[in-house]
Image 1 (tube, rainbow, N blue to C red):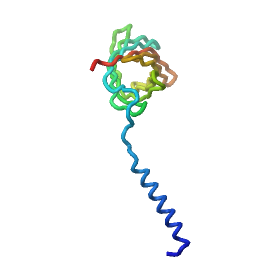
Image 2 (image 1 turned 120 degrees about the vertical axis):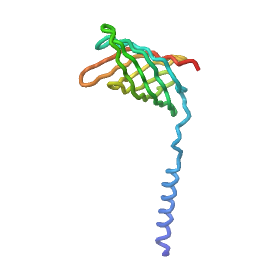
Image 3 (image 1 turned 90 degrees about the vertical axis):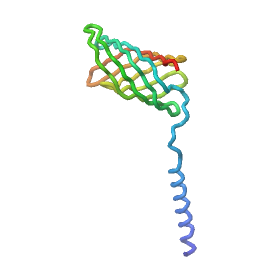
Image 4 (image 1 turned 90 degrees about the horizontal axis):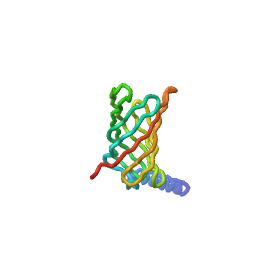
Length: 146
């Protein structure tokens, strides 16, 4: 091998090693900074467009750092007709700072929830907008006793 090609080969070998070591980094979740895993009892009120009471379960199944994922299963009852409807879907969100939670629940539409964490309770507001129609309300979740 000529002496002029040797530095190029060494540079390419070094670049290859760096690329391969990047592939070996862990894809494991980071330790949770928020400790939300588990089952939470969800209650809420939809105030717009039609008043509806909401009750069900928020289940957080995965956490990594300040982010989390899970599932929300609700029953909504129309306050005028008493007609129930099922709402369920996946949840993903994060904690901002030490006490604000922000998550989306993909139900009939995506409902964005923003609330404050105090001990084992989270309370706040939610809203959804789709095709010009808006719905909103309040929510409260309490951790089930372990």
